Amino acid sequence: MTKAQDLLLKSARWKPWEYALWLLALAAPWLLSSHALIINEIAIVALFALSLDLILGYTGIVSLGHAAFFGMGAYSAALFAKLVMPDPLVGLLVALLASAVLGAICSATILRGSDLTRLMVTLGAGLILMELANQFDWLTGGADGLQGVVMGPLLGRFEFDLSGRTAACYSLGVLLLVFVLARHFVNSPFGATLKAIRDNRLRAMAIGIPVSRHLAVVYTAAAALAGAAGALLAQTTGFASLDVFEFHRSADVMLILVIGGAGWLYGGVIGAIVFKLMQDAISSITPEYWTFWIGLFLVLLVLVGRERLIRPWTWWGRA
Amino acid sequence: MLTILFDGIAYGMLLFILAVGLAVTMGLMNFINLAHGAFAMAGGYITVLLMQKMGVPFLLCLPLAFLGPALLGAVLERTLYRPLYHKPHLDQVLFSIGLTFMAVASADYFIGSSQQLVQLPEWLKGRTEFGEGNWMLGMGHYRLFIIALCAALTLALQYVLTKTRFGSRLRAAVDDQRVAAGLGINVNAVFLGTFAVGSGLAGLGGALGAEVLGLDPSFPLKYMIYFLIVVAVGGTSSITGPLLAALLLGIADVAGKYYIPKLGGFIVYSLMIGILVWRPQGLFVRRGGK
Image (cartoon, rainbow over all chains, first blue to last red; front, side, top):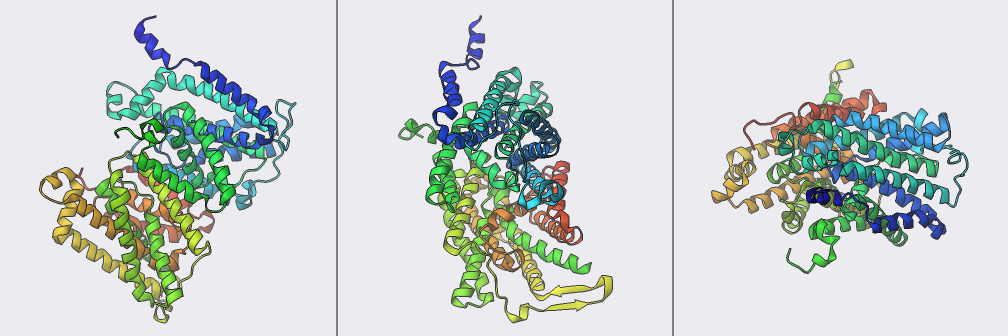
């Protein structure tokens, strides 16, 4: 193997600490069985952040409406379980497909224009879906949420129980699977073209990358994964409400990604852990006003510099 | 039907006053400021608290609702916003969302989460009706007041922008910052002044709108999308663009909510996405700009 090839492939190779991390993650529901519920939540949020990373970190699309796909996944999984069949894996696939279709439709709106335009259309898409979910109350339960979702056992054997261990394992398993796929995806030549588009769209176009098509593909993929995260939430809680479309979900997931670092697949995972633990700690002190502290954190994060906050050893060097 | 048109125009004028500051600052500094609604909320709360606690008359509150947010905007511009002008848009979005969250939580903490009411003076309460049947025009006096005030402000803004020295400096800075600075224009001072006036106008809009739009701590988040629509659809290179966009939005929203209340905001959002897909830079873009 030549040296250049070796260098290029190096970043794509699995490192020993990664195996250790995932083993630890999969063992977590047993090691910390009393915290299985929060482990489940972390896995779901990590998956959601991972999906945003594909479009924000790797492709550079600032989206404020990613919750649209999360909600789409949640509602389609819940409705599928309620109306068609309660098997979770089939439901997950259905939710994935539904969000992918929605993502493919929405991807037509993000191809042109400036950052502001994209911000607006993604935000608008999220709000439209929320309005729709609110209006079609005969189907979705409107503002009361969709109740009475009963999930069947996973793989026909493992029941979802109150302790949440099955749920946590299920979510972690899906997260690992998606992570492996996403890793392949971003390290492929296709992933390299995405980074080229992010760094300089004009040049990417000039060297013959079909920018619009690639943007559409990655947006659809990210939408599908966000839908999977939503489906996991709906399936493990047995409930879907309008809250899944709320603006603060899109903002939170962006914050999560930024805490962990965008453009790095572990960013979403690490950000999800930090964010959820922080949310848990702060909201046990001031349950109502915890958004204030999140806001303060965001402001400080940007003023100090995103890159520097997660690398404390640079704080005392030259900026 | 004319009543709906009238209400829509009043609503649109209000949105214009709320959003014009955002349009100018966005065009000027290319800064995506999602915290603009927080200044509007500040103006609204100043009015409500002054009237309730100290019994200040409504008309006197309006200048104060302008000055308070303007001062706040000037201080924040100098301390927090200025370092961010050259950061990527993602940073700006995160920063201004953070600021909005802080404003929402603070308002909730200090004032309470309940909806605040404005006691209008007697002479603004009535309603005048003309014509009859389908063509009846019912004009709420308060809405008439809003239209008159906002129209006057628009004319004043247009005058300042096109006829005064400050206006020409501002336009020069919007067109090309570096060349403007090279010609000896103190671009930073222009930015500071513009940001302060923009925030002040938002505050005034918030005060005027407290009765029409409602005022509670979630105001900045609830109306953020409307301000952004005005700016994104109207473009940032003039003030006629945002004005027309605001009127369009106001009329579409009022008419949509009156005729098809079930769909709520659906019409407005779809309209916006449609327009932005068709014309990504906004409906009214001046050629030859940057």
